[in-house]
Figure 1 (cartoon, one colour):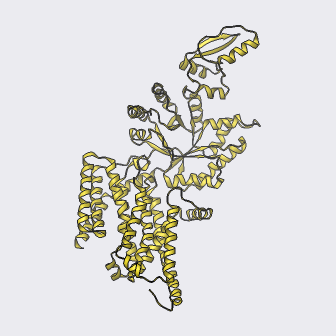
Figure 2 (cartoon, one colour):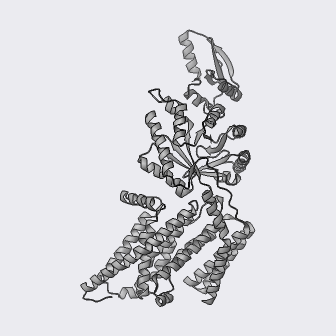
Figure 3 (tube, helix red, strand yellow):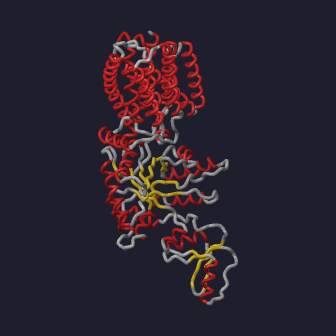
Length: 625
């Protein structure tokens, strides 16, 4: 016991000494408090094209959106196809030209080669753009000038470059400009990068990749090197990059690493959905507040142009109105760099080793604790030699799995002697936070903050503590259980525990079923408390844990089975903090509410249990078994 007290002292000193990394993480999150809203330029121009009344112009729409709070507009490079869509030119094939000549009674010969024919744009900018990219043959057919571009490949969707006039107009209107960039054929990407470099000083701010790939990605062996080369050039020019939530764009990890994580997290919302207006606003606010999103990309609803514009302007205004005062609408920027020096990581690895030794010696045996310590020592040396991130992720997983078990299993002798629920509850929460601090510290840095790298092993944190607690509860009690006479109140407890476990299984994971009533309650809790506590913590895990401690103090061995649902609270709060892209202060606030509410509901559960016990004892003639 004396040895463990000494080790606890060393561990707490180490955690205090390494807390600088956690403070830096929280400071970085809180200081980056600007978010931006983005709408594609082609959807804004579409408002004018599809307005049957003729009252809406692109300039008017831009002004209304700006007044509503829109911060940025994304633009795509011009292609022959979208130039045709915008009525800047016409694209025709050979058959169409021959048909026109036939009806005109003309017998002029056309080039024998395969290709497409264009009507020259009236605007000099576009005319020069086509000449620079395709060097077309200039034909005079039936007194009409046409451009002929030879080739059998589909060239009408190839990027011609970004419209500098559009960029200039958007900048003068007060918008940030986001460039949409698509991965091209390998031989076209170098020229695309050069175009991006040339227009950087024209006012472009950041790059948002389209499709499922980043620029330079391919299945070739040199793909990563190409991505690295392109990214470094663009980063040096001043570009930052967006990463889209729930979109696994191939090559993004290489882009992030090569840009030193000059990444802005983006949440995309298509307003042409089945959600209510209020749900759309809530979703946008929650993305910024709870998931460190700093860009909100909106696709306009499919309605008539006037309704479309009015809806979007109203949404922008209400999103800004509902956004917490911490956040301001403006120019989104990447998070500042979190410095994690080697000495800090080493201190955390030593702290994790001590923590696991103490935990294993408490849960199992001193010999197994020494084996676990030796394993941790090997991993620490391995990290010092290689500095592989995977080693830190493995250590963090070990800490995350053992922490809920260590926190939930009490020292039965001490528990009976002190007879204090509050003391044991506080001790369990304290152990949990030590493990949480270690996990956050080990997996600290911009790679985790931007979710380019993640905590590995979430499912194990959900499953292993419950399995261990099940074995712990049954160990040594099976024979006694088989001999125990079952009375009414036993069946009530068994039914409650069974329903709790079933509910936990149904609700675990992102695909869990949630009723409309619960969604309403969730929203009310969020409105009231800023960050909603997790249901499985304050309604299931912690109340059952409090009840189990109450009964264990009274030497009720069967109460160990209540630790099975009880451990859910501790593994859930660990799981909350392993979502490393979520702001730390949000996770702390959410957990604080869960701990406090769980304790209160736990005492209510004790009260209800005693009433039920008294009632059923009377029902079986006062016998309590």
